[in-house]
Image 1 (tube, rainbow, N blue to C red):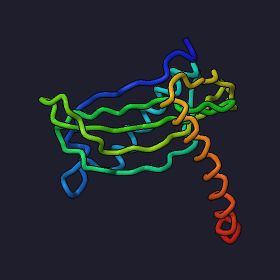
Image 2: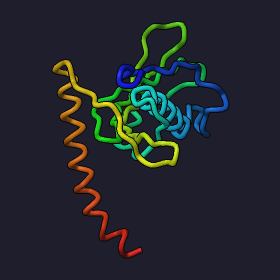
Image 3: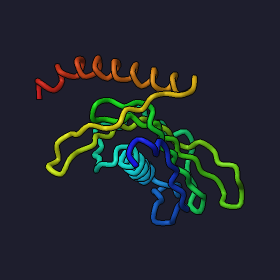
Image 4: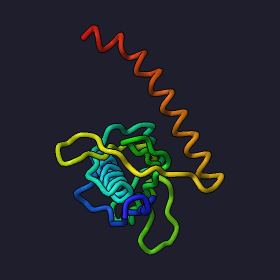
Length: 160
């Protein structure tokens, strides 16, 4: 039911096909996993097909090793009229250990769309805890910062 599934975790093993030239998991593979988790979480929350509108603040903290268990956690931290901001964390570690270390984190914005591909309304997420309130406030500050960046980038875009 829309508006009830706020978070999810994808779990899988990092495979040899995911490696880069340095022998670690390619950053692009992690970005794909993040996009998949963001889609699954946003679709579960909204009950709609969702598209990626933005990925930002991507930080690669530690490498992911082939054969490690990877956990991609996605959580709704803010909802607009048609969009959902998601906090994403990627953790990994040996499959024989319950301990997983943070490897990557970012914010994703997903937009719910109707059958014609037009943005459509999503259920509102209301924070329940102090941590939730802080995450929502952070998402709002990021919206304001992105607006400033967009204004600044306008001079570059118009000269192309």
